[in-house]
Length: 298
Image (cartoon, rainbow, N blue to C red; front, side, top):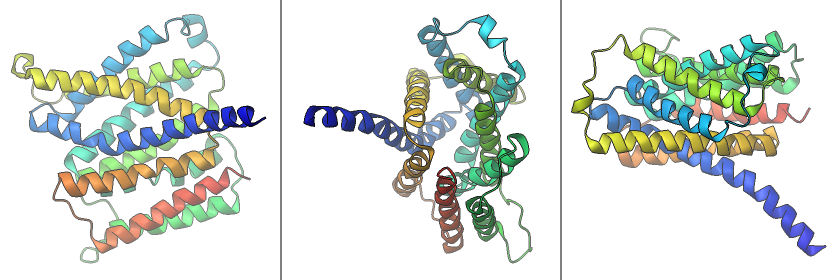
């Protein structure tokens, strides 16, 4: 009996550890992209390359689970939407943390539960619970607190990084809702769609930038890009494993640890400092994310 309980505890611990590890890595992943930017490899090109590496690894690892008849079956337009929204989400996230204040970008990204509530109502016809209304009110209060500029009276994001963080969260919510709506395609197909969508979006965006001379990239940068591609692939797999085996209300709380890691990393690796107004708005946004976890219990 004791052995059975120990095995059960180990089975529960593994997906939680996977999510916690994913949150830690996501909280640090912005820094290598900044290093690449300083090496004159733009965020869009770095994103395209790293996700292309993840795509190649995924095609090799999942080759037995990918069949064209399955991909083209069901509602293939949902898979296309997943690819497009994943492309925007991940590219905007990378560009945001490169060119903006890391914590502000992440906090604006974590407005995603607000958009998820809205899109779940519109696209999935889910009823809005009292916790859903709380998520909307608290998220909006947090956004207003962070973005409001008393001098101009504007509530719009004032920097490029803020716009990227906000749009990344918006598209992330659409991505999640479409993934839930698509019950036909397996996880492997959706993962490949995500990697392909991000790689293509990053490549298309980079076409509008000055050409990068590949010979000018140092060996260290090539190794960093390769390492990031492998990390993106592994991270996608372990986080998907975690969210599959951990209840959504627990998963979102664990993933919020990303903010703690990012705050500590930004403190030691950059000279960025959050204003009291931003901290207050951030606290409201985090509270809204915690309330969104309560929605999953109803």
